[in-house]
Length: 590
Ligand SMILES: *[C@@H]1O[C@H](CO)[C@@H](O)[C@H](O)[C@H]1NC(C)=O
Ligand SMILES: *[C@@H]1O[C@H](CO)[C@@H](O)[C@H](O)[C@H]1NC(C)=O
Ligand SMILES: *[C@@H]1O[C@H](CO)[C@@H](O)[C@H](O)[C@H]1NC(C)=O
Ligand SMILES: *[C@@H]1O[C@H](CO)[C@@H](O)[C@H](O)[C@H]1NC(C)=O
Ligand SMILES: *[C@@H]1O[C@H](CO)[C@@H](O)[C@H](O)[C@H]1NC(C)=O
Ligand SMILES: *[C@@H]1O[C@H](CO)[C@@H](O)[C@H](O)[C@H]1NC(C)=O
Ligand SMILES: *[C@@H]1O[C@H](CO)[C@@H](O)[C@H](O)[C@H]1NC(C)=O
Ligand SMILES: *[C@@H]1O[C@H](CO)[C@@H](O)[C@H](O)[C@H]1NC(C)=O
Ligand SMILES: *[C@@H]1O[C@H](CO)[C@@H](O)[C@H](O)[C@H]1NC(C)=O
Ligand SMILES: *[C@@H]1O[C@H](CO)[C@@H](O)[C@H](O)[C@H]1NC(C)=O
Ligand SMILES: *[C@@H]1O[C@H](CO)[C@@H](O)[C@H](O)[C@H]1NC(C)=O
Image (cartoon, rainbow, N blue to C red; front, side, top):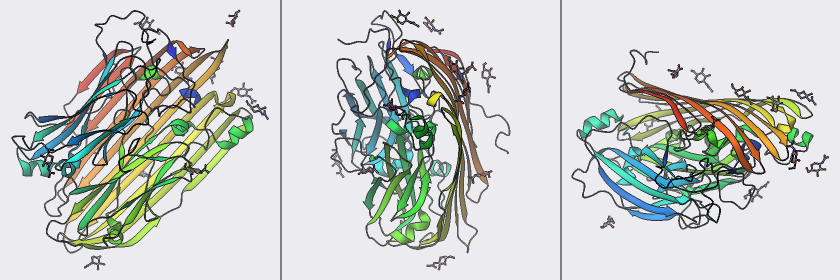
């Protein structure tokens, strides 16, 4: 009964009793639950297709690493089962014991039919990777995700439990088993001090690149699910108690989020008034604005306005073969500097971190890692928060709905600012942390949502400034992110239960980073842009024909290294692929 040989694509209509796809199928544009198989006759020796996300390769030392296979597992029917666990111990038999780089490698193969599945990798409850699987084909696929996990250094020096959860489901139709290897590569530190200086170690302040202690803000094992919290609606929230040592002098909360089912394509969710006016029952609502609000002891300390990751089965799955969409194999995490608030939580008592999702619909998967830097010579630090403002959301909504046609415009902004000092053996450092967020979404709707154009942009500016008045010491870290999305889709009926879906999109992830350690400004700039055009003819839940074409431009300019890639694919074939690693002169002098 295994249906690997089927030449047609399938549309799944069971929505509610399925484990989480990365992609949900409630949304019209996501109606296709794809396992795309186009070859009629398959030879057993056809090599698997390599799927990949375009990203800058991790800078690694030339010396070969000490590599450890941490987990091998075949993820078959894992839905609703406990995460797969493995014991991790630090690589004590490596010839070197100081590392300049630690890389997690996720390598997976799959053959047959299967949906895209969301998954997570946790070490000691700390999330290391949030990702989406690729969708297999009958001839098989293989993909690799490499992630620099050096910032989790202190965690990697201790024995831990590794946990991996994929909510996969097998039956007579969906046969794809994910065969997974998780390997950690430890690269030697040839020049320990130099490596740290390069990584941003600041001798004067102890602003080490990596934290001394990382606390999981996730659910505790044992579980029959991922360690993430599930947030199901706008009033739901998730809460974790935590306690920090008394000698912390810096704290950063790293937040992981992903969105599924009714909110998978939150940026194109219809305004409720349009849904009511048109008696729409098959399209999720609450409008297109979402944010994950993060609070410490009921005080809002930051918000995440996430990048619009489109999973490997999203919009038109033919777009993502073999180039997958930005962030789909390595979802971005978001840092919130909470050092100014340390004065409120250094008392050795239990405090809480909580998450909620404004306008949220079922379901958001959220957790966080609390990175803590400890005073190496002092058992106690002290601090005080002296200014904290979290402006309420500023929302402006203009809409014009005239029957099945309409337009809406949503503009939202938020700002969170805190200033506080922490006195440690490194001095009395005052830290100011500011998050400025701006969101704009305009939507054009027709045919009761069958025709939709969404234009969205998010600006996310983060600034952390630390200073000691009595000395010239100052630390500045500034990041300006811009997430853009343009999605144009049209579904039309061709009669006889056949539909024609057209979708074009453009999305961009841009980030500029500014740093100043008192020795001048280090900068980096990233521009990652994807365009896609696709269509599909769907008859009685089967994709009869279709085409997806993708063009991507990835441009990173750092102080010391650059990476440029210009690549395109269409109908499973790479059309061109140009890579340049040499920096162009003066790219950063802007
Ligand atoms: C860590 O795990 C290893 C291997 O299981 C074991 O030999 C070692 O004693 C453990 N170390 C600690 C500190 O528990
Ligand atoms: C929101 O979700 C929570 C958790 O599932 C549930 O208890 C609550 O009833 C829901 N609230 C609404 C308004 O649906
Ligand atoms: C709304 O749609 C439902 C199901 O499609 C239908 O049963 C109902 O009659 C419709 N109501 C109106 C007011 O059109
Ligand atoms: C909706 O817009 C289309 C073209 O964009 C137009 O042909 C149609 O008449 C409009 N329908 C209504 C009810 O305004
Ligand atoms: C640390 O510096 C701040 C701001 O200059 C000051 O208000 C505070 O009293 C200082 N704390 C200590 C313990 O000296
Ligand atoms: C972010 O910074 C840029 C450049 O300084 C500025 O133009 C923009 O308005 C800022 N955005 C927000 C949301 O503050
Ligand atoms: C998608 O782009 C193609 C080519 O630019 C264009 O012909 C088509 O009309 C677009 N479709 C939609 C739904 O925007
Ligand atoms: C949507 O598709 C239908 C059928 O192909 C076409 O008639 C209509 O003009 C399209 N609408 C838009 C806005 O592209
Ligand atoms: C729809 O299907 C019926 C029966 O298969 C056929 O007679 C008819 O021509 C089809 N109509 C269209 C528009 O394809
Ligand atoms: C990428 O390559 C295509 C095809 O050669 C070319 O048309 C396009 O201008 C290139 N884009 C950039 C930014 O270099
Ligand atoms: C895509 O490629 C397949 C096989 O290589 C070919 O049969 C098909 O016609 C192509 N589709 C389009 C729309 O070009």
